[in-house]
Structure formats: structure tokens, C-alpha cells
Length: 408
Image (cartoon, rainbow, N blue to C red):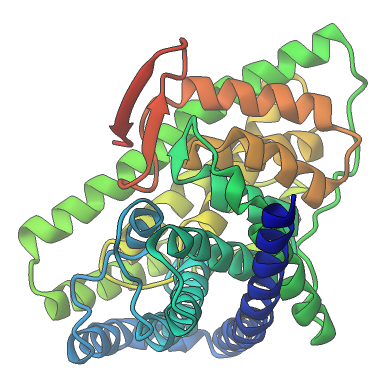
């Protein structure tokens, strides 16, 4: 009992320290990205400098010796192995993501946040001489804090950090530090008036067998869209690497591709994170092809070396697809938008428990039975593909069988 209490006090103190530090940096990151987004929306012509922004990002990474930085995959790998997320990650991913949003690249921010949080927590762990096993927990602790500071979903942040690394096994030893660091970071963010991410579903469906079947039907379609999302992301990235191995040339070409795509579409709805379009999907109709365009814009942006993350584009893709597909199965479009958002997140991250918790923190608890069956369906049918190639699927999705293979 004394040993358990000692460990509890140790991790509580460490988690609060990590949460406060990451909370401050995460808050600054949030406002920097928001300012960049507002500036681009005020001056849409900023998209014309996207290729130059990409070159600048590539140059920053080169002079910092981080050309081959593994991004979020490195963070995941660090939890399992004796690897380091260098502290230089903080300024370069911070600046790189802000530039991407300023110039109109289609990107999120959570990938950058996870790298910032894990880099800071790793530095704290080294400063207090933690051993290797504790350093793995520190990485998850930093991930939780950063995710919570940006999205305002602390329980989702904690569960995600524990679940995403090895699907089928959860490191519950990290539960206390992850929860406390996430809550500490959230409190810091709230002090500086960072609003939690929340969407309002205008109309829920009655819980009955017919609506459960409709939700399952929508979830099946979402599972296949999640596979499409991951496949396009990886295919475009592979094409860039094959034909444009030079980072600077890749950034220039990728920037011009996004500019041309924007000109063809005729608006900038698919540039940046697109949080306003996600909100619109809950209250109105969305063009049927919106989810496809977001996948394409995001793949050509991130594949070219621009920074940010894939989760918010996943929200966009899921919300817009759910809005349209809900009409095919007879669900209210606002409710279908929420189902689509959560199912896509589940399918691309392979994190069903996180997705269920996310539905509660984003929408409230009323629809949890629907979201639970939706996440379970999406998880089983999304296969063994995922956003993060270093993520391990430890147990089969369809039977009680140990498979231990990395996500495709």
C-alpha cells in the first residue's frame, strides 16, 4: 500500500508539471493556428505563397537536422521502444503547422500537438532522471496533455494516448498520469479562454431496432470511407517520395497542386482545418462530394511535407460524409453527421474506446448506445489499415487471436 501511494504521489506531481507546461505551450499553439487561419480567411490571396511556405518548412527541418523526423509515428514508437522525441520538435512543428494553416494547406493540428506534448514531457523526464519504463509513460502523459489543451476533451485525450499505441493492449499504469496531465492542461487552456470543441446535434433518433439497423448501415459505409481515407493518404505520400525525393521540390509541386485544386473548386472550404464546415454539417446540407475533396486536399498537402495532422480532416470527412449518407439510410442528417464524424475517427485510428468517449465529450451522453454500436462496427470493418504505420494491432479484430502486426 505504501509503495502504491508513493507511486501515486510521484505521478500526480509529475503529471501536473507536464500538464501545466504543455498546457501553456498548447494554448499558445492554439491561438497561433487560430490567428493564422483568420489571417488567411481575411486575405485569401495568401494561398498563392503556399509553395514558398512549404520550402521554408523544409528548410527549417533541414537546418535542424530533422529531415527524416518520424512525426506522430515517432511518438507512437517512443512509447514502445527506447527512442526520443527531440526537444527541437517543439519549435519546428509549431512553426511548420502555423505556416501550413496561414498559407492554406489542408491540415489539422492534433498531430503537431501530440509531437509537441511528447517532446516536452520527454525533456521533463530526462531532467528528473526517470528510467526507461517511466519515460514510456511520460510520452503518453505529454500526448494526453497536448490533445486535451487543444480540443478540450480530457478523457478522450487520456484514453487515446493509452489505446492508440498497441491495439488490444492498454497500459493502465499510465492512466493516472494521463488523466491528471490532461486535466491540468485543460485547466490552463481554460484560464486563457480556449473553448472546448463541441458540436450540437439538432435532433437525435429514438432508440429502437429500426434506427439501430440504420446506424449500423451508416457505420458500415463509414468504415469503408475510413479505409479510403488512409489508402489515399498513403498512396499520395508514396507517389511524392517516388517521383519527388527532393524535399524542396516536393514542397513546391505540392503547394502548386493545392493552389490549382483550390482554383478548380472555386472556394477555400477545403483549405485549412475546416472546422466551420464541420459545424455547418450539423445544421444544414452539404454537397455530396465534400468528403472526397477533403481527402484529396489533405493527401496532397501532408504528402508534400506540410505539417499539422490528419484528425481534424478526418472529422471533416466523417461529418460531411455522414451528413450525405444519413439520407440514404433514413437518419436525420444532423445525427448522421455526428455518427460519421466519430466512425471515421474510429476507423482511421483503430481506437473504439476513445471514439465512444469522444462522442460523449463532443455531443453529450444521450446518444451513447448508438455511438457505441457505430464505433464497434466501424472498428471491426475498417480492417488493419490506419493513419499511423507504427501502430501495432496486437489482437485480431474478428477473433480472440494474437496477431501482433503493424497497421498497414
